[in-house]
Length: 223
Image (cartoon, rainbow, N blue to C red; front, side, top):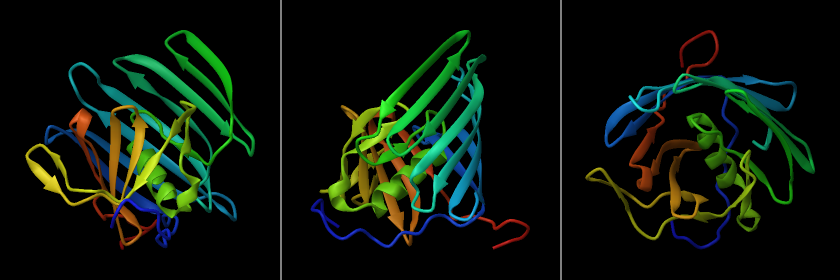
């Protein structure tokens, strides 16, 4: 695959079920996330994710509830947790033209609104599955939809489809990615997508690798 615009691959929204995601820093596991995907009405998904990141300087425990429509456009989310022992909360409501954001960290509260001028992607701090779903949404979108709107940050986020060469991290080399999300200047998140699912995410600048094993289990049973 090259970096030129081409027809988007056929990618369906994830089926209901449970999955686990592992984050590694310099090839050492630092975080674990369990995500549960459920139907949300006749045309939507609800994703519940419990995340634990265990590092001496930055321990995180967090629960996120995210809502999407059938096309993986985000509808909103709530987040509650603790970062280094300090409580945080976030609520995002995403309408057709505007997103409303309310956040609280320690005793500081903020409220704001962002005009939606381009397709939105939900990218939550310390929530791995939100990045997985953002990569899937960008992959299934039309090539001319880039750049996207990153929520809740409100920043413009270009994407690059395909890759010009392999990606190296921690002494290992991966083939060219399916697409790259340019999260911020100098901060790129590469995604490998096969058979309609994200296999892994890599952020070279942060020495971070997120593995998404194909272990989805449908509700009430085994695959």
